[in-house]
Image (cartoon, rainbow, N blue to C red):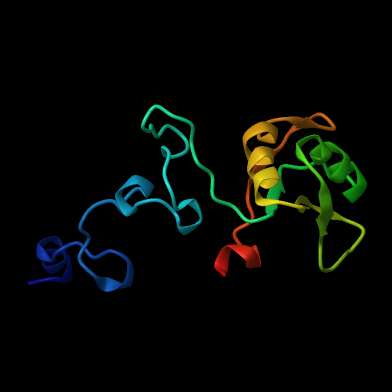
Length: 144
């Protein structure tokens, strides 16, 4: 018996040498992510109870798809439309602090303002690019 014959009869193995049991579960199979406790439908095609979606966030939002020319002042000015911005930062490359990573953090005075920014400024345009806005998953206030 050669190696090829044995390989054809052996069960298929996935990552880590375990038997492959099909595709990994989708987001809907695992329940909502921890930052979205408390109601509403899922994002990206989920549905809900027909009402408005509840967004549970702390005071910070993460912004990505920023133009590399966007400064922290530009970010603060754009997000001021949804509330009192107390902090704004455009993240920089560690090896060259003059270069933007194309993402940033905006912190509001209240969680309600942050939730409003997620609802209203997602896919808004800043310096010619549609920006993406979500809760900051590393926000310390979420984990208290």
